[in-house]
Length: 324
Length: 188
Image 1 (tube, rainbow over the protein chains, first blue to last red):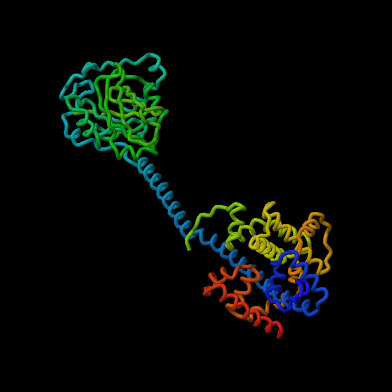
Image 2 (cartoon, chains in turn blue, green; image 1 turned 90 degrees about the vertical axis):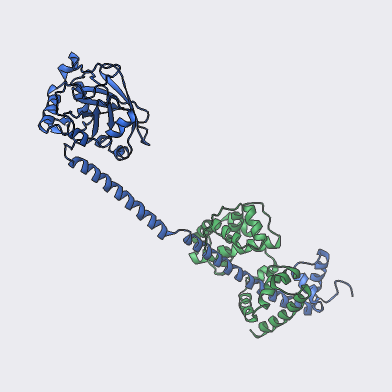
């Protein structure tokens, strides 16, 4: 029997190979030709074809089901990768911290505003010698190299003194005198200004800088003028520097954002005579903020016992505690 | 379940995944083509369910082609999926005697989408009915027959996948399963 005459119905493997397209072209053409004349083979092929078609249909349905499953798993993955509880917890923590920060800052500012204008001077000052006039030399005089000790003449420039409301400076002094020598506050518009604070300790001559600075820490804190008022105070009169002064700076409300950090860390400082009118006090500000970093504060006398310190664009005034 | 960072695979990577039988490739293709297929079906009297079914079927056709080695990657995979989906939907519509807006592109796609005698037969409802009865076979016959006739895997592969001793064992088992299926068909 020739290839084309072979009954494919009797050869299941060939029948299957024919339907699956695994026969060569000539062989496949021969089978196709035979099917036109052999009804039994045609029915066998048709039966096998239906069977394979059904299996493939089932396979395709199964594949679609797999795809659906994979899609739902994919969607589930997306849901799982969004940890909402954790996100909400973190968000709540952030909100809480921000709230605490705002509250803390408000309290610190509020507290600073509510602080008494006049504070107790350091024990050393309270127990110090009897008060003397402002022109009186310090107890342990140690002449500064460039500043004449006991020189108390003021060298106010005419222009400044004519423009400046001299009453401001006088008012400060008057208020300070009313409150005694325990503390001194620079007064803004006739009322104590306590938004920011500084302490000043004059005449530390004979002591090392570090010792003086350490002693300065925690000393009497005086008022701080806000920028504009402080500038007026500076303009009201520039006093001749009488003596070298070591100054510890503490920033208050005008630089409130930095105040706490500054207060917690005493700045390293050194002072030098700038000219007869001013001292330059170099403060190493322990601030991360770059506003004051590397800036050299310039200190000028406002009155015989008050100074103004300019750090960058901020000028703050302080009162030198009178000594008994 | 751990979170993972996924990078969108390239089409070559997707096809490689399909070639290896990794169904995750199908998900990528599905998502890639979903908008276009849904848009077409919905614009042509279809429902979202119709669109979903057509899209799934088109993706499966791609999988079959890739597995069979008959897929030619000459255009974007999405283009292929959309063309197949259009073809499927047109045929369904034609069966339902619905009116279809003229779309030359679709007609081209239909003409390009050649069908084998087996594929034509698969459209028949009778085939669907018989396929449903395949479930009566139970395992491992159903899986074995699907692997062989649908996924067209070799006897060696099936032996490895299903844990048979060797190809001859699979061949023998396949013969038995087929005879059983013929009986099921005869009674259905």
